[in-house]
Image (cartoon, rainbow, N blue to C red; front, side, top):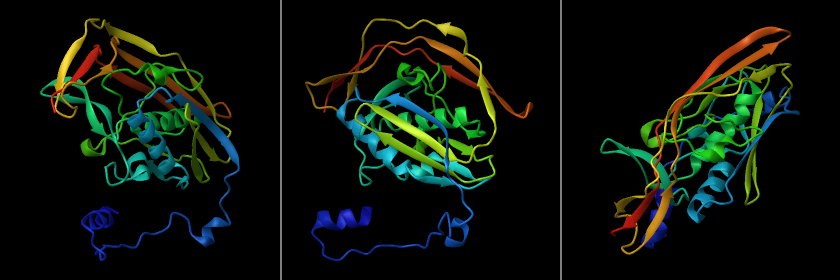
Length: 277
């Protein structure tokens, strides 16, 4: 795709494109034995209040994860499902949380907002009882991810292909799973479809410890990514804390998975980026 776009921009009528064979997830022979008939779990987070670029990135990433299939015993990788997060693949510059020069800050970032998609997928996976193989939390806590019924304080996921941060889970059921997304300009929703497992999933309320109060004064940072004379309020003050969520999955009274999901959040500060570009 990048080669095609570059050729079009250069006015070329001929573009050399490298192709490769990719094995299908499901063959015709396999399709007859696959049963995807039951809604296992669903989750939802609000994105309608997002800035335009973030709004766009959330919907684009959700559309690319939609329809992902996971075979029994197979692993779902968010980064593989969503594909390259670049300008050429359609993403815009939103904002992301990074460590720069030893300190945490919110900065312009291509694809900013896709972590909301990963978080919403994670929440469906969490309540389905699937084993999580890889998950990182945000450097700051973002309150929109804690809204019930699927969200809780500390139940988030961050991804960044450039830093090898991925969200992965294993399909521990005996049948295929399908990941379905939908969005309506206000709410982002994910559903996990498959065949009923007979699992019971329970989770205790988050245990919150080591609270670090956030400072309330406004912090200003220069950004060459923004035009000179402009400013953007990018970060809201939030306390730092540690969170632990205990999830237990049982079947017929027997524990089949017992896991504590831990997260450590730094305090966030009120931050405005001031353009110098």
